[in-house]
Amino acid sequence: MPLPIATVDAKGRQAHGAAVLAIGTANPTSCVPQEEYADWYFRVTKSEHLRELKAKMERICQKSRIKKRYFHDMEDTLLKHPELVDSALPSLDARQSILASTMPEVAAAAAARAIAEWGRPAADIIHLVFSTSSGAHMPGADLRHASLLDLRPTVQRTMMYMNGCSAASAALRVAKDIAENNHGARVLVAAADHTLINFRAPHEDHPETLIMQALFGDSAAAVIVGSVSSGTGGHANGHQMSGVEHPLFEMLSASQTVVPNSEDAAAGKLTEDGLVFCPSPKMPALLRQPVEQCLVDAVIGMLGSGGSSNWNDLFWAVHPGGPAILDSVEAALALAPGKLGASRHVLSEYGNLAGGWAPAPA
Image 1 (cartoon, rainbow, N blue to C red):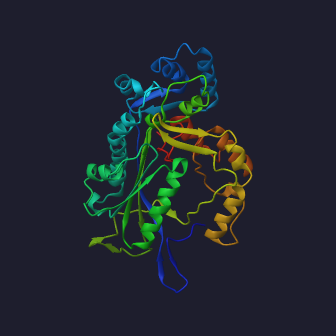
Image 2: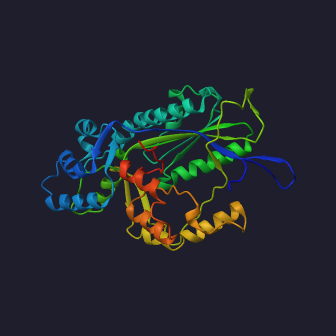
Image 3: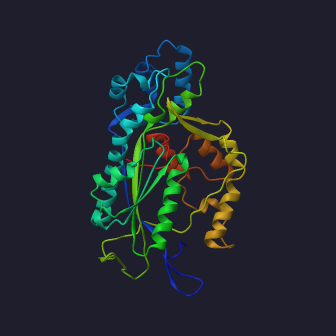
């Protein structure tokens, strides 16, 4: 039984819970089937002579459970910027320059769809939270994003960089706090990630590069978050908050924990060769042991000690980091077949989307 959006705090005052009011997604138009990716990748990086590495890449792609991924004009970009392929050449400046325009644009496309679904003018957005792990700028991608959407100059921007796979959760947690502590505020949360930041040619001394190249895709998503209460319209900056809005999901709780001994499990750093990210093969095993206790703690905090521990009673949307991650969560919680169907669908149709944002099924 879901909790009502409007609750009462310890002093008897009405509390206004956060809710997702609209969702929008966007993908680049260039699509590469996974069964063709190894051929494409070794061709565009001029690495077809590395036959053993190509054979390994083909095996990784076959085991990935990914059918296709989307990319933003990658081949044209590589032709114009050979330094993106040659690791002996510094390429961070070129990557940053390209990402400065492509990321806000695809994120704006996703946000425009969310705003259209929301049904209110973009000028009614009071806060913007923008998240990416693809590059870093000052002013940030949030400013360009706000300009593309014609948000008000006074929109309060929060820029989040380098949160990796936890970016979606972190951005939504921030939006929830903003919405619940600024009555009537509407928060646009947008995120985009672009594989250009970590794209590089295969190298015999770094076979782990193949895993990164075989899993990730490009995407953007946006949601609008607001604090609403049952039976009340509310106001924010003179705008009536009723009628057109239809909450899709209640945001009952947000929490974060660090799994012991996981500090180096998903480590990355910006270098002259772009973002070097090395996921540890021990990550699925690290998740398996503590995941249930993390959920118990979260459910008790949200629903009290009477919360159910039958995890099959819940709907699941786990970040599709890879098949081993999903298998580990499924086994640890004894989930029934199909309970991670939404996550497996996203992995199959789009790949790992880095920041944790998942497009709606096509």
